[in-house]
Image (cartoon, rainbow, N blue to C red):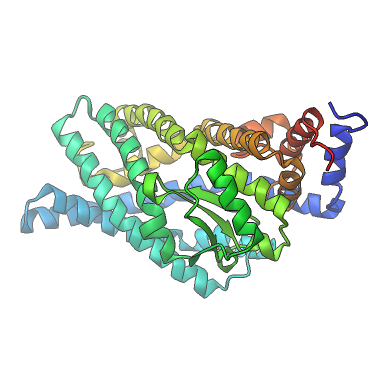
Length: 395
């Protein structure tokens, strides 16, 4: 351990870089976000109930079956109609939760028109993906009514990986412009880091993340040939120096090298296995409670909102599990960053800039239930512990 260096004091010094009122604002935003999980679930249930009670999907199914009795066409029609109706009914809530509230806390400077336009694009992309996935789901239900939940969970793993494969190529460019990091010391350093740990060094990108959000962030996405590391331009608008870039990009490279994407795919596949099993068991009861008249069985696409209600409730209950899955990967990526690039102060400086949207010192229970990243205070303390145990040699 480095003599004279106190990790506790160093952590406190980093957290003290923000005034108490900034910490209080971050806490209010974060804890309000916890409540959004509950209210969002209730809104989702209410919207699905309205669609179910209207009987519109039963009529759509009947109309398509009379005109051309093809199961895949019925599913496509029901999914598109359901997606559009539920999106329209959810618009007031989504506008509040994902734009107005973000604007109120200073986390976005995007105009509502821009946000709404991107939401329409997301709606179209989501509808296409949903048609494909639900067509496959209902096909499996029809072909294997007793074991459909097992095969569907396996399908979730492959769908998860396929989506990650095409996301950087087909989906993300619809919302942002991705450009190679410009020549210079920063790019040279990142390329050297990539080569050091075996990460593709030809896809180090900067994107116009400030278009949607003022959050200091970077991410890794893609699989195999589409894998890339992208840094939001917000990082540099908030004066990220080379040490911060090393700490943050090292973290993102950790996700790639450690195979966290594959870990997440299998973890969520396991949760999907449990979830689909429960959907099969709960569907008849939920359909009765929700008043799904005209819905004949689980294999009936008109019952899609019933499945949606069950999954919404299960997802809410499983929040501690899903948060912990991601939190484990994020903690491991932090460790990878300091282990391979020994930039604990750079990582700590970057983490301080994320406190505005992620309160730094929650209770342990709050962190376990809601946080999909370790709390910033704990992440900085871990980095400082590493610094104490692995001092850099004097220049």
